[in-house]
Image (cartoon, rainbow, N blue to C red; front, side):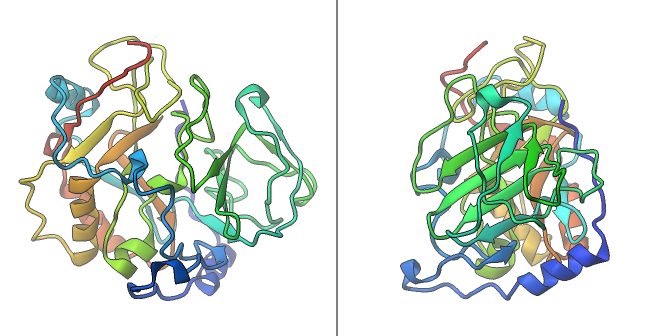
Length: 321
């Protein structure tokens, strides 16, 4: 079980983030002229993260409800509240690097299901939870020029960044819909990419629109997965427990008008694109970036949303029922 420990990063990293970030650009009519910005949590511009027809970017607002929706929601917690697992002082930071960023060797614990390196990891790449974290210690890297995503899990460097040791690693072509091989994990339990499922400040506070599904976790999952997931992460075969890759959406009738503007953007995105179960962790935790632009007070209003406010989108092709 990959339970993540929320650890506040030091002032040095906060300063680095603040220095690397710039105001989100306004929407542009020329969408191919806004490349991603280099640096920690650099705005990703207007190029889509995965093609527009990718499952992460699929509008599921009109998709049928799964017959077992109520049971599956109850297994996670109908009265358990949504929890934003991101903000000014915690979350997952990614870093945008140039195409000529030096590659360094990475060795893996789960080498058989990892994409071999080298990976373009800067020596000072932000580790999820900070350098002393006992949690998942993800590192996420976007090669801006080749539009390639590199993701690592449980990262440590024995030599100041000249090489790295990781639990697992995955490389994704962000211009392709290719999935991991069936049965393979990634840097995430479900075998999915992490970056496309993050709530990002450049979307919520910049373009004021989230156009993709969001990553979420639950404590107890089923030993099964449903596409686009490629891997399960449980021991129970309880049909009432959710499989990895299960997608839920906020019910269309949920009233978002009383929420602050940033929370409304997130909630309306959850109605249209939903959330995908990607890992075992705390129930109804949704993932986003560590970013000083967030307003934690506004994000905390998301905790008014309960599990019963969601419904499961009909699942097809479950592996390991």
